[in-house]
Image (cartoon, rainbow, N blue to C red; front, side, top):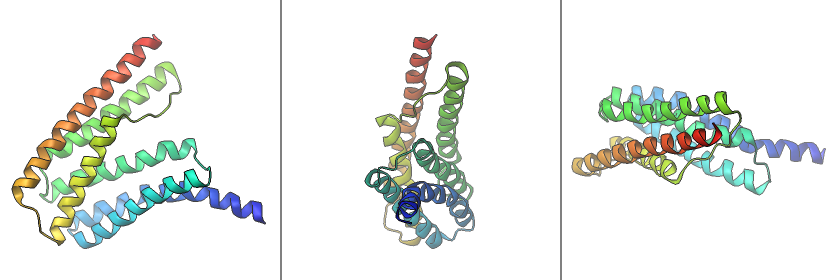
Length: 187
């Protein structure tokens, strides 16, 4: 019984990661419904589960390829849904939503092409990629929280929009450079 309980406990990080991935659906729906208080609760749950699943995976020595792939995928799915939803209700301009999604499409298409041409590879987000994702999350939280607790000036949000656009674009170019170089080394 103890080994079965330990096995189930070791599955908890992947379960939390999967649940976070599924939270993208109600998050986007609530943004479109402009129920920003509910959105904040979903975002808090996603944030807590993101930290908790990583901590549990390391603590229980339960890291897995599934977790390594689905953990950042959950963030991407949530952001790729939240940004067009925020654009649809007028919180951000469409060009920013398309830039965020476009960067992720370039990364995914590049990864699939690399896999198809050269085989299996290890998922390895860059520091710039992580920083870009972090800024995208910060902007989403600032904008969504601002709908419930308006505290930031419009000029601060405008500066944040352009900083995120620049870092996102730079990150996309950086990924293309890195994976292009790896592809040339494999050829």
